[in-house]
Image 1: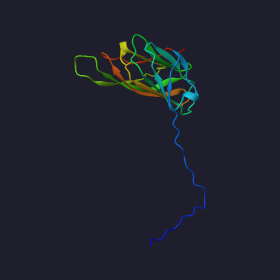
Image 2: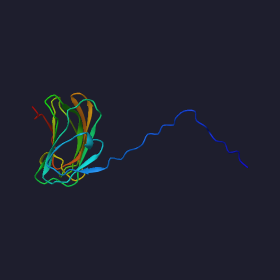
Image 3: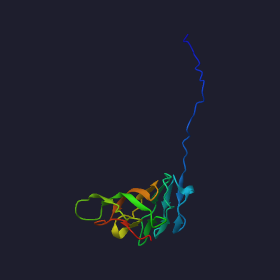
Image 4: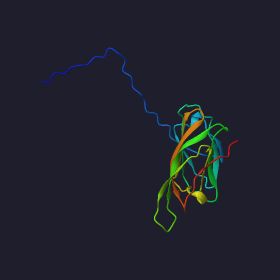
Length: 163
């Protein structure tokens, strides 16, 4: 018979739980993101798009992920920072799928003043499954990344419109 031994611990055993926040559907064309929306995927299913305002950045590590649940028709999906101080850093990859030429996937970086992200069919993006994520990395800065399917010769989705 095998020797069965019991191991005793003299300290607390700590376990870290995995919390599944679930998917949230965007139900309003205008939306202000808050802590209760962080750490989960928000699905945008309104074909007319909408506008989302992120909270002021502080280095909190909050992440907001947005996925298109339906292809945009004539509308746009816009994400803006909360104030004139915050900017986006990083960029998104847009795959050019609408040309007759060979498709390419191009990286579109932010500029030093980028504070607005716009996803629309006319500049590339806006197809079902396109996604973008924003992370509060430090005061004044939101890191952005994402992947979109461009229609024809996509252009940068980043601009400076918040004053």
